[in-house]
Amino acid sequence: MALNQGWIYSEQISQNGNGITILNYYATHYAHSSRQEWSDRIQSGLISVNANVITDCDTLLKSGQHLAYHRPPWIEPDVPVDLPILHEDAELLILHKPSGLPVLPGGGFLENTLWGWLRIHYSDPPSPLHRLGRGTSGVMLLAKTETAKSKLSRDFRNGEIHKLYRALATGNEMPDRFTITQPIGKVPHPIGYLYAATATGKSAISHCQVLQRDRIPGASLLAVTIPTGRPHQIRIHLATAGYPLWGDPLYGVGGAIDENSVPGDCGYFLHAHQIQFTHPTTGDLQRITAEPPARLTCSNGEGGI
Image 1 (tube, rainbow, N blue to C red):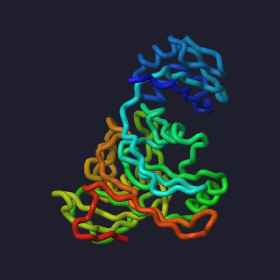
Image 2 (cartoon, rainbow, N blue to C red):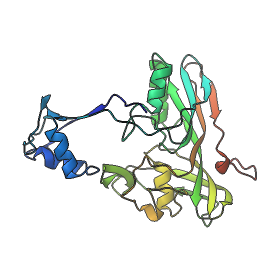
Image 3 (cartoon, rainbow, N blue to C red):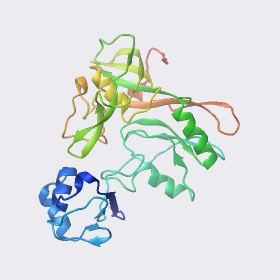
Image 4 (cartoon, rainbow, N blue to C red):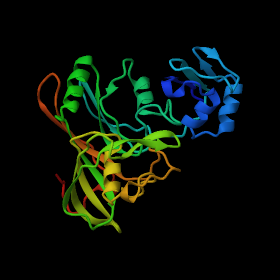
């Protein structure tokens, strides 16, 4: 297995970091690594301040400084790389993303991502217009021109693009139809922060419909639409309502967070089934469907919302 090219994680020190030692800063802000690991990295010359390598762990930081961690090359986890093209023209690319493939670099993934796949197959890679979680499969909409990117990004912001999901949720006692409006925002986590249910978060709306109860024992198949698009919205909303996604390692009943897991961990069942939008140049209404995996198909033929 080949090493990737490594990565530079850059940031600017805020007022809250003023006067803190560089070791305390990293150990506090990025607790996914131990204090000793950060000490070893600093002393090995992997961290710089304003482009100057720092090896003294007691170096004091000042607000406004530019901090960079030069992560050495590493072997990334394997990912699925079969991405069927659902539609392509001069303006758009629409792919069927498999579960297990991250969209953008992050965590342990750099080149084994959808973005890495695009860079291999396109000299001018199309731009993803939205995100799907690593464990989420289904329709991905990408723009090949600035005109398409601008128009469709505006449509996303205005709620004019409609997405339909399939989800396997724990439990069978939910109403036939229900709506969840729990705000979603950042909360502290050992990796720094993640998105979760919080009263101080941004508004979020998910409309849910039961397609089949006991799709597998103890779990129901749902159709879900989301007029808003907060990170991990469906996972967070269903967990908060008491029906977490079947197999979700991170978000539990009531929105409880497992601090030993991260958002990129797989195991849950969520699929972006369909997207409907107005083509940015022709003005035609487009409806593109990605067939769901077997566990998210409905044996009674219901399509939902």
